[in-house]
Image (cartoon, rainbow, N blue to C red; front, side, top):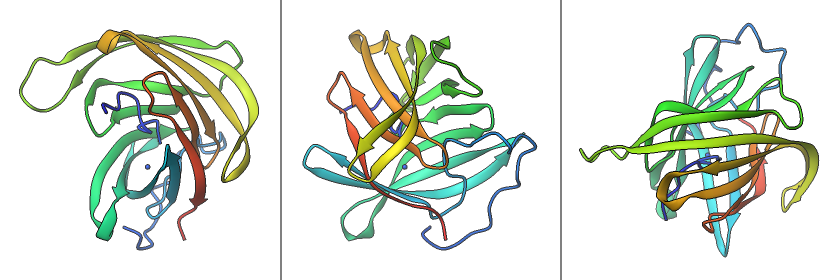
Length: 200
C-alpha cells in the first residue's frame, strides 16, 4: 500500500539515548512531534502492530528534521518517514514511499478551527521516473479529545483532500509532544496509537 502522507507518514514514526537538538527560539509553542532520538510509538493497523522510533534528529533553522524508522521482526529497521518539526508546525519531507518536493505542510501552528491551506508538490519515488504532481487542501477541523488504545489525548484534527492517485482523503489527530495519535484514511491505511514512550 502506498503511503502518501504518512504516515505517519503522518504519520506518524537508535533506542540509545542521545542529546536533543538545539532548542528552537519558538519553543514556547507546543511541538506536535517528538524531537529526541529514542522516542517510540506503537500503532495498531488492522490486526498488525507497527513499532516506530525516532532514529535521528538534525537541527534546521529554528526547528528540527526528524527521521523515524519502523522496527520489524528480528529488530530489522526500515525507513519510515522524515518530518520537519518546529513551533510553526509539521511538514512531511519523505513518507517512506515518496520524497515531497517541496515538503508538504501537515499542520500549521498557531491554528484555529477552519484554518486551511493549499499544497502543491511533486512525489518522487527515487526510481528515476517522472514525479507525480500533488495538489491538495488541508483544513483544521479543531481541537478535540480523541480516544485510542493508548488513552485519551487532546489533539488537533486535520482533514486532507489530495488529487494524486485518483484522489483520496484522510483525517489525522496530532497531540503535543506525541505527534500522530490517530489516522483514518480513505484508502484503508488507518492507524491508532497503542502506546507512546518519550525518549529517555
